[in-house]
Length: 272
Image (cartoon, rainbow, N blue to C red):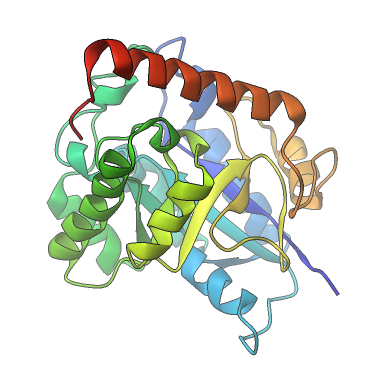
């Protein structure tokens, strides 16, 4: 029997943000309310690695009310605002980090006017890992991997793993596709690099039948109330993996990749 698993996707937990980045910035009070909701209703949190183990044949059973709490981008506010709340409720989590920006700022967010948002310093990253948070890779410079050449994408995927393993002195086995974008080739490159799971987005419930290299996640946004969260946890109004991408999503991916090919033809390949 297929079991549903909500894999929640957060980004920043902070009081302030630019207008363009506001949808992905959860106020600390709202984040605390979300974690209280999970704790009070008996949800048992897993890291992505633990979920992966449960999905393997002969693996451990899922808890009765599973939830996976993930964060993309490795913002410094995870250490300051999110981690203390997670620890207070004894909730496990997985944090995906673009290694090229460690100790610096979110240079890839210039369009959102958040290029000055701080990322974790390597010392903070090590502290987070020592406190039980699973650290996963999120590429090196946060590009749309499916728009890169095979050589560029491979370098992004492998370098992120190498940097994190050097910093943490432990294996890094989980990957998250930047922007949620991937292709069959990118998925294969993630496998070749030695990762054992990869998280996509898809805004859908994951399940025991999901693709371990394209795990569905549910986007949690700034305006997601606790009532909204309860509906998302129940899977109300969202699909369940495995599910086919919407036709419009496929067309949008094709358009993006076509623009990338045309741009490369005019300017030459971009260095990774």
